[in-house]
Length: 459
Image (cartoon, rainbow, N blue to C red; front, side, top):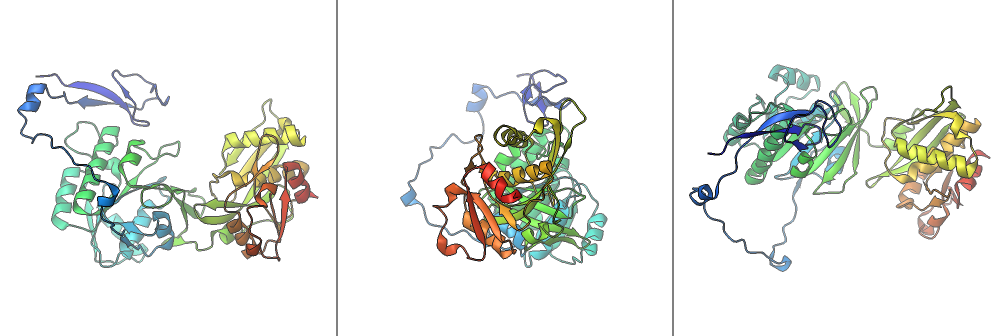
């Protein structure tokens, strides 16, 4: 009989090592290697005498031979959540919800369970007692009798409960605390998280149950239990935002049944998460006027245009190396834009500390916000307030040129709806812009270069 072996798996990235070492050779994390036992592979004779049936050849099919089955979606009655999911819940799907502790994952799941009227919900709590969940639900005015609560951490007991109750929706809070007795590793390790999620996925597909799995995130902001979870589940939703901010952003990182990078905006209140139907107006509610270092950009998140204020503070540095600190914007991209401002515009950024912030806690990912970032920095550097009635849209090239962006009409309509008087766009967007959709009440300025756009903003 083959001897059982051990290996070491990084809990951060999933890399495997045959011997223990303090640092993971793949991701560079320290102290993340955990020991796991490896079952010996069966020998050839064991495979022959196995009780399993022999392999059966699977006959492939052409597209024309497959039936056209319409997708049936179940509305959660939370419009922002339905938007992120692609229109509602899909039967037999597995959804992973990640986020920092206290950001609202369990709160959203309770509100979701209360809104699914006529559906049986099984809520597995592996972190809190049933009385804690009950008190939170009562505080949120949730009195649904369709929600069944179970406090359990062992996967086998959870599967037995699911088989007995046959719920329509299963909620597991959280996957890092669930363990299977079939593996010797402790809860939260890569093996336990991966295998437990895999068994829940097979359960969802086999029984037609919609499964929600809550997962923690690491210090780097990624979902703990590594990337293997993202390959197993159908949809990955991640909460963004700080506990000190009242707004929460729910972003779809992966969705097999809808578009990715779609977001939903919520506001944390005493009664739970409240939907923000007009995020642009909410993000600009506390906007200041007549102050240097501020500019409004039109970002597109999924199919939704959002107007967000970019704030920049530029001050003379007291260090050998100036500071570059950004919140809500990629810091490496910020360094690149500062180099463009210094080389093409002539601003001496090498002697200045630059602090950049996207107001409201939103994380801006697309390149169309780069013009607003440059305008805010130049405004703060020159201490000249930018035009508060103008919206900046455009991507910055290394030569200082403005590059075209997509879905320009949606951005202009959103700016006009909130009362802005002017929009500065890349000149290359002129041909793609349909004149019939542009209202005469808003002025459109086409700028070929960053220098031209700065003159239009700061003159």
